[in-house]
Length: 356
Image (cartoon, rainbow, N blue to C red; front, side, top):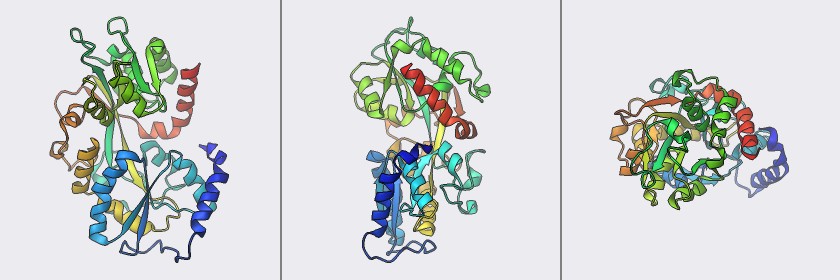
């Protein structure tokens, strides 16, 4: 993650310019949310930012009068490292992944009062001193039903059987999470014995079909590969599968082995509106808001007192959701402690293997 300093000069200039802009008084980090508060919310952009506006921000504004400014950066950890190191944090909320929360709690992210959050209603190992999880999603295996109308895939091993099930497989090039777990289970590792991951064994298994894998540089490209029939199978984010199906690909899920992960909203160190930000997140993690967000995004609330069947998912959203009950095979948490310690090293191996 120290590649951050490659961007330090540019980011620092942006941060300092933002801090110097105008003559408005500095925000009070301890002030509660109110009409004079503007919470700067860093998210993933696109449709997801619109979902967060509808589910979290607009209802919070209606309740408190606080306003939101939404920002998006693909290199948000890099930018945040620079902000915190220079004492010039300008964001109040950051939407991030499980392993990053584990890596940077106390370094980049503020501790929160867990008694104010549903920490007792989420799975063991998913909380930190800085967060509780919001929603969960899976690395789902799906295939194009039009390509396999007779003999169809039924197990995770079928993803690796190009003799019986010919066709290109497409995966997201940018992250090894989910695909490494799938390769190991397909190679005979019991789902309950996955961690610590044998990455070399997983890459060797993937190597048996490497010539049939398309490494998509983005989820948009992955979607296009499937809709345009350039690929007939994928292992990718479950929420994306519904979107791809609705875009014209006749995807069908395979319920054999699925690994899942979660996201979280955190308050960065030195946030100018820290108290108001924590208040907004406490509000966002309540059942009503989580149901709305999940229905829009296709994700699933983590807290145990929200029944996934109570979320008004679309038909495609239901089809690829591994948390709705019934026989959906083995559904295993991607160990957040393992990934927090090892993500960088595994990602480097994954990238080198793709180009090697």
